[in-house]
Amino acid sequence: MEPGGQFDMQALLAQAQQMQEAVMAAQQEIAASEVEGEAGGGLVRAKIRATGEVLSLAIDPKIVDPEDVETLQDLVIGAVNDAMANAQNLAAERLGPLAGGMGGMGGGALPGF
Image (cartoon, rainbow, N blue to C red; front, side):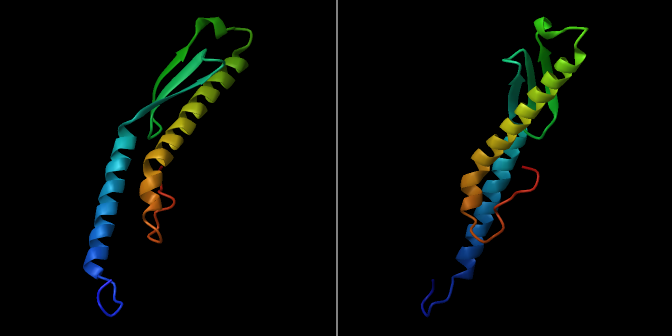
């Protein structure tokens, strides 16, 4: 605060700019990150970018049963959903401290992450 109880607007704007830059850098880092998920005790594994793009899907041949395709489908969905949850956790972990420091500046929920 400046003398007389006034806020230093320049300092406040500089702090907001630094915070915005830190959030943008963290979002870029998150977008470039890859996370994995699994289902069926690791028999089905999915690797995705934190943005949601599926990069790979690995299915152990032991789980493939032509008589029971539904179970395999459920496991694939489970592995992808697990990977998506891991991506969301990564975003919350990386952005949480930054968003918390933004106070009333709308940093709580960041769209897309």
